[in-house]
Length: 168
Ligand code: FEO
Image (cartoon, rainbow, N blue to C red; front, side, top):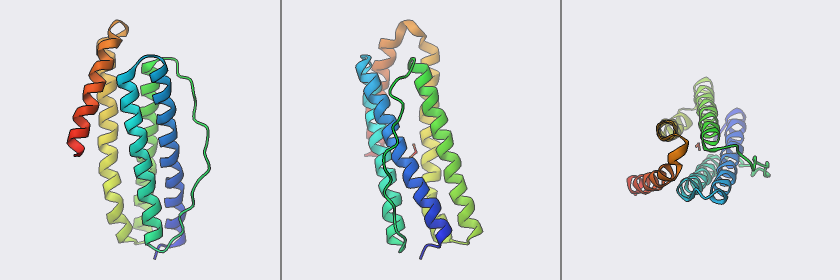
């Protein structure tokens, strides 16, 4: 059974994963409207992944006899100045999520909940991948510069295909 402190911090993470899904959905829609269909595909897929993360937390809390609380929606930003600014915001958001996963690890250790400590390792690994994938995109974006954004967009589209194969 989860103790109250863990139930609370895991429920906060439900909210954060839900917000991540909404944020990437807003970014996907913005990118689609700007004609960046490769970037939009990547972000729509990220948004779906965040929903899966959120569900993992909900199901885990309930499985351990806690009560998952389903958050209301916070409105994400709808406008971004340009692609570099938007991907910087993605990276900052993922770093923020990594910190909150680390905070859960710390609470598991304090409370000696080794079951949750074991379970949360999947997210520790996932955050390494998520940050690395966004950094990779930012590096590409820095290399191509403003003139080759069309090629950049095609490249991100093929990257999404490769990631999906890796997940299969
Ligand atoms: Fe669920 Fe991108 O962290």
